[in-house]
Image 1: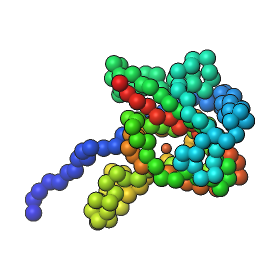
Image 2 (image 1 turned 90 degrees about the vertical axis):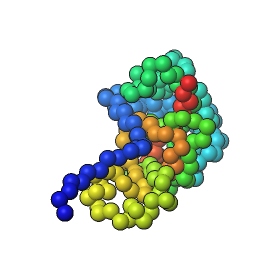
Image 3 (image 1 turned 180 degrees about the vertical axis):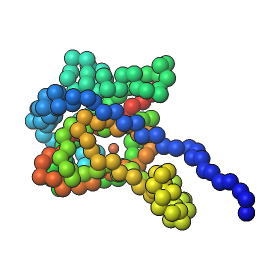
Image 4 (image 1 turned 180 degrees about the horizontal axis):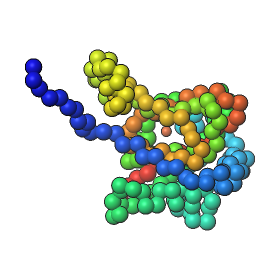
Length: 197
Ligand SMILES: [Fe+2]
């Protein structure tokens, strides 16, 4: 048969990736900040963590606070977001010891959510997102050749290894989990929710 063939992807799920240049210059200050907070609030909160410590949540609005101003600067001038849109950001800190992980969850009532990775050694736990249509598309996905799946990121789930100084922002409805910290050091990150208006 003489025909041409093409595909186009509609309704994609954007994952926004920010990399902070020269993160090493501030990394240790941010690490100290997180351990100071843990010392002040050793109980913390339990949200999605199994074993790990999560701080109570706080609004990101204080320019004189080193962590808050860092996060504000990262998200200021967010590419591809309209100038007229304002962000209300609410964050908390996660310290996962070796063996700790975070169970599958999403961030209801928010629009965008994200994570800043501060301290991550190898094998400290990937973040894994679940395909929101994974159930409905199971057999469809299974029928595609690997090359097509790889070129179009068509998978039941997709993971990102944590990278120090990287910020990942994703739609809040997207279900995700953090795999077990299999390194012998703490894994430190800041999670946050964004409400847009
Ligand atoms: Fe989360």
